[in-house]
Figure (tube, rainbow, N blue to C red):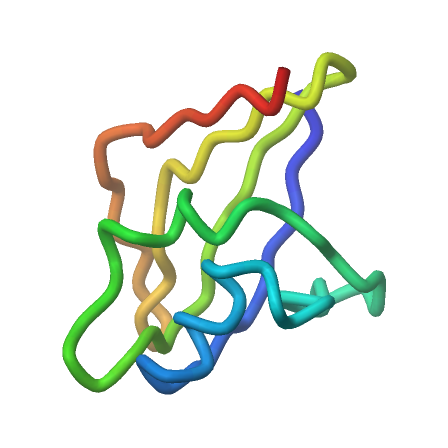
Length: 87
């Protein structure tokens, strides 16, 4: 599986626009690529104030996605994998 790290900072209203599909790009990876993926995979990280953090997104050639960790400051916290299959 390939992986990318994205830094995301969205208010709850901005997240809702992405979730509804009215916004186009969700994030930019640390290496500069514009990344589009289902906002649904971020729902477990949504707070009343929105989403803020650095996320590791893993994906394969069949468009299977998984978020398996969150960076907070300099520490890495593992979380249970959250998978999404676009097919």
